[in-house]
Length: 370
Image (cartoon, rainbow, N blue to C red; front, side):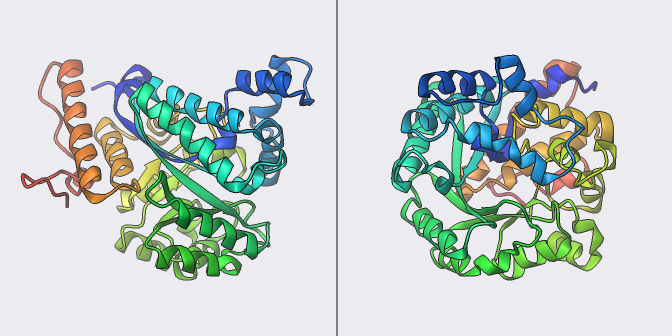
């Protein structure tokens, strides 16, 4: 069965690692700047796109993060936040992403005088509208920031607790890793875990396996954001594998931030072959100029993922979602049924047999998953 961009655009998908301020339409940034009187470092939309879409000349994560100053400059009002969240639903629906989790740090949107609750309300309102209009399912993740003091992380953790079961599904720690260890923010994660809330933490992207170990053992994370350098510690890698801790892999972003030398050298291939639960994500649709469809295409073209293996990646995404067990099983069953239908229509024959990895996630007749 030939793997094409058209096929990958058609299949059901997830995106579990997506930043709101990194996934804005450039046209929206331009329009909001005109409406709000914000001065952009660009004289035209074309120039703006050149500044925010990071190319291969990006030197490191710090440089990559500078583009966020531009998007954040127009994300300081309730209206802009709601609009951007709704538009993101539309963009995901256009490529048949059935479920996505979008993360942001409310503390970065207070320059216009908004209260933290106003900010979260605006994003959730936009996501809710998008869900109704475009038939997608969403989850919202609030981020603490490594480079801001632990007291702020605690404040954001308490905000997350307040919005539990109201659209917020997890708490994260984002920002530059080097010199800002996760363990300094562990009190915030104690608060989160004591309230039975999901945790995902950026780790092992620009810093080594010690960052991942801290996320796991000091902060109790349930998923790892990136995990690019996990391969450097075989013992820790086995721990992650044995405990089925999902990795939120972002191939294009990792290449652009120099966390990985090239797409063909990305460790997602090794992780998958070894048996880890890996998921494919965009990180920042704008800065990386990508989509989930394109990331899957890169996995096929540059890393040799076959059609059965791509199906595994898709199902791993649904398995790793911060959803209730019953809702997760429902979405997995729906995705598997849709994949089989697409196979039958595309190949004109029987669906291909599952690979050993896929066998882990095929539902039983009782509706449970292995």
